[in-house]
Length: 225
Image (cartoon, rainbow, N blue to C red; front, side):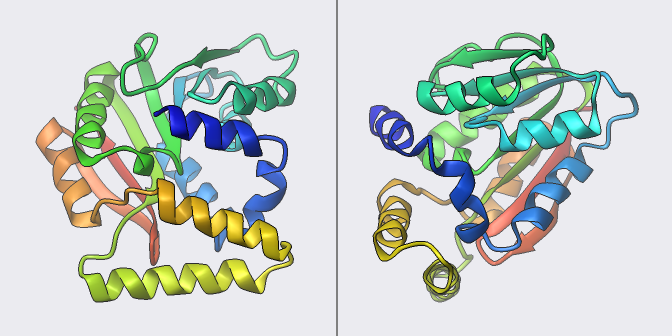
């Protein structure tokens, strides 16, 4: 995972500014992830896996202003941006580390992730889902806003074409567009949606479903009974 750390350390300062021009329907994508958490109180214990600069964490704290939130990420530079974002909030703590091997740091009511887990090989994705299940409190919810491969090679190519056209149609410079698509082609290890849903069920999750999909971009959820 050192290559992941290096890649995201390098782009930490411009990451937030680029997001609207990298992810189609960004507001709906993140907004649905927050909506799917569906927790009955304002003070859940939340873990954001692959928290990066804190984009998802910030939205979760808007929804749950009294929450205690743990931000876990492999990139120290991305976490530094998150620390500036949440400066003065004593209810946010930070764990720098590779979540494939790093202890998740406690028990949680909500475990969420955005655009991170797809960087893992399939075995590590599946193992992480199991660890997430075991780390959740009873009735806890897992929400993963991420990328999923198309169910067939034809569909996958079509989804990738759509995404590439979106990036190239925006205001980012030619060099920025090339770098974003290069990261996509070299760092992303997307798994099929159907496979990921089955992994969640196999881990013990109930109420497993897809609550948002725009081609490659999906929001998956499951609950620990």
